Image (cartoon, rainbow, N blue to C red):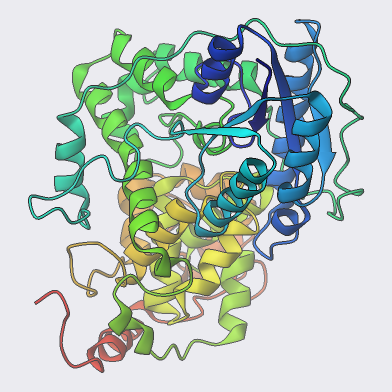
Length: 476
């Protein structure tokens, strides 16, 4: 029996469910295959940084596969055509793959399966990307969870599957394995964001460093206490690896649980990983969130914010240092710390009164780890239109958020060099600094750094009034 393994967001040989099952069922006679798709690459929310990450991950995967005397077959086109053609050309009896959960990709996979079965080729699909797949837990009434904490508790009652062994045998074949395309060939400009090391080895290195770090404020040891501090190296930075499957989620959880770090830190990190599961199952059960509010009554909201304010926000020129630092970090690296993602999302929706969907799209166009379910869930949480149990009137104060989580201003000073010499007392509120002091450190408000483009206290009241137009709080 010969099996074609269709790689997608599982760009690894270790802990890969579909690939491991294929190797077992076919006794190693497995052809590795990947197809890039015009419909996916042509989406308006596609970030060049993510495309580059995938190209680099594919190069790494291809190199690993060549060590087995095989090669990664590559093609480009509509998956309903390319997968069937590859299965036929390789003489495959079946095609195995790990499922995806976004509505357009679910439809694509169903279409591919129908085409294969119509041609007499078998199909096996597997869950692989999450700790707990959609539908595995439900409330006592049988409905999906819409609040994170009870969802997490239900998931914690289930055993975590062990990571699967690395695949070491793949078949030789004659399918084409051309050189990988470049961003230019795929129609993308070179991303402004820094190039992240991608691939299975890089992902395992990141996990190892995170688990072993011992410096103050660094790694898993300090995750529980420092995960909200954007200047601290206390987060794993595995989000892009988990997004594209250059490391398996079971491997991450298994090695985390086996680490010698404090139990509190381990529990908190695994708990945070489960947010991926939560938002994915929300998207799975409530696919309307792809384009609209989880709570449809909020689709009636009128967003009066201006294009000029959106431009200032998107370029990190709002006059609120923590907001601007975060936006510039994303433009420079393709990454943004989770705490500051919440801050800038709250600022766009509750201070600038701009539709959350505009921010959601901007993030997807720039984040290296941009994921529909996680990004959508986070933005709707910030906008108060999503699954969160708290009412819409949670509104972050960007100044106090900066002072609380960036004490001393290390994060702001890294990404806003024009404020690097401002004393810590004023770095999160430079408009309150004495003019003489600002002159001494080379800051001219309105020139080298902007005045705040809105007054937070005023905008907070405007936001409450905007949401209040809906008359009744749907949480009541």
